[in-house]
Amino acid sequence: MPTNEFSVSAKPPGGRDRPRSARWRRALRWLLGLFAAGLLSLVVGRVLFFSGPYRTPAPLPPTRLIDLHVHTAGIGAGGSGCFISRELEQSWKFNIYLKSFGTSRAELTAQGDASLVDRIAAQVAASRHVSHAVILAMDGAVDAAGELDRTATEVHVPNEFVARETARHPNLLFGASVNPLRRDALARLDWCAANGAVLVKWIPSIMHIDPADERLIPFYERLNFHQLPLLTHAGQERSFTHADDRLADPERLRLPLRLGVTVIAAHIASTGENGGERDTDRLARLMKEFPNLHSEISSLTQVNKPGYLKEALTRPEFAGRLAYGSDFPLINTALVSPWLFGLHLEKAEMSRLAQIGNPWDRDVELKQALGVPPEVFARTASLLAPRLKLLKGK
Image (tube, rainbow, N blue to C red; front, top):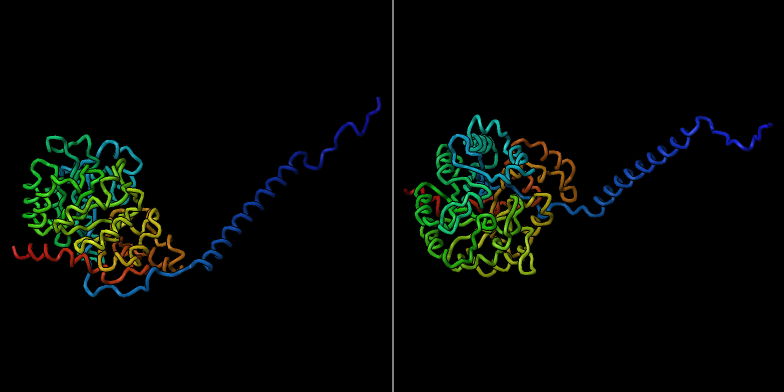
């Protein structure tokens, strides 16, 4: 039977490979085009939207700085008494925190939790700009009997541990933490004051403290007696596995403010919302009413807080009320990088900042480059001055 030459489709050279190669070439051209478009948009975006620093950068104060907000932690190694919840230890955040401290579980187990404090002291000593750091204890939640509730506590860093370790380092200061609902809260506060505390730190949303609770009035009065400022987290809390952000509503600070406590609401109450309003707006309103209310700029260069540092530096309610803090060790994570500020800093400046090895110097110079004025850097010392003067006279 003669073959019908039209009954069999003629293959192009290479069979099916030719159409497949064409598809790959089209895909490659598409990807290259997408990359070029992205690069062009970045260039055009920088040209169109580059606005420079939030404020004109100014020289740093002539004296070195005090960092108001530095964390330590531990797993109980070396008899520290520290612990973290099993939930936090099993979360993805735990290894990030270890890395940001520059340590590992094995190293902590071998060297003890005090090695973290030693590491912080050494890095502060090597800093060109920071002379002292306030190391923060962290009390836990308490039960109905006023005792520490380990099952409800996310992280615990005892006052005794922080007081002992900071006393070994002249460039570290003791930041106490006392849950005012403890049965012996006033005695604990007195102990902290007698052992060199320069402030008291709360995170109400994980310590289960309502600052508006009138049962806390004696505690607030004792803070005044000891001239101890209250540094309290305000706004949303996402560093831990759970938090009740209602307790970090700035409006709940009216009670200690009316009683004359020096209150430092951390992070300008960034990212939170209560009562249908941004927590930052609620804090700004309180600034108009209470001259004893302050805030600080720790964490405001984090990628998850865009615009908050600019707001802190340009909003009139915060003028004269801001102090310097770093929120170490979070400044050692991918949340904070000079390369995040391409619309505000020149490429050469971002590169220079990224190459600074000391975390405190990098933090200070990044904030300075973005326009944090010298009076903000200097205000931490003035806020702590009454307490430091009292300690010096003892």
